[in-house]
Length: 128
Length: 139
Image 1 (tube, rainbow over the protein chains, first blue to last red):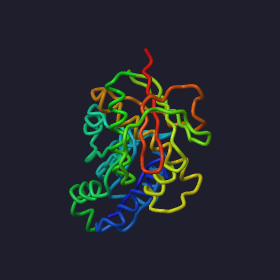
Image 2: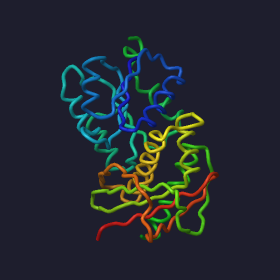
Image 3: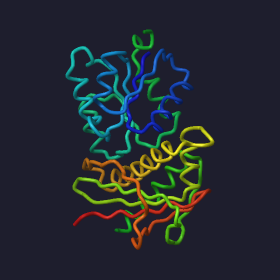
Image 4: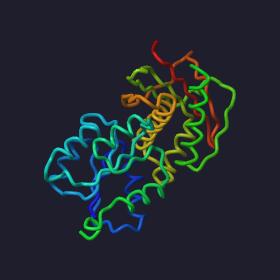
């Protein structure tokens, strides 16, 4: 399973990457990006089975990133999980309607992210 | 600032410190920021639109950053990054719970010295120092 972590905070990217490394999930590669545009470049270069993205980022934010992924036939089936400071029900509903598979509000416990990823990752992605 | 927002700010800080830094925090009487306190300001756009201001003691900021990174000595860049993220978490937590039916956009937090003379009515003491916040909604 290849994971792309998208967040403008290097501290949060580090926290997510450490959580993934300690998760026991069959992760083969983790790449990082600090906004949506960098994420799209990383997807073109490295691919991913799962994108974990923040929403509020300078440049291209997470909402536009999710729209771009869902509108790209090559990327449309990637599992997207949001990890955001935005805790509103309205934002959760909006992101669910855009096809996001999971949503965690910051701060999150590492176990919450591990359980979320373990439950969302398709079998074929785990096998890749 | 309404009592509901003040209560939500305090609850946000308690939860964030507990989850991110394994710290307990308690409400304390407001005081002036120390000279070396680290400040952050964050503007949000809704409605509601407004500003959240925060200051944090250096020792508390270092402890929060170290816990998030799993490192004893965070770099200045990591410290700044963690303070911005802390401000984002507090604002997002409060706005999302008090105004849960609307999508509010947050600008990135801007670091700087705390506003001299400004009130920071919600203050909590963590294990290494204080976090003080104020959130005002534009009429």
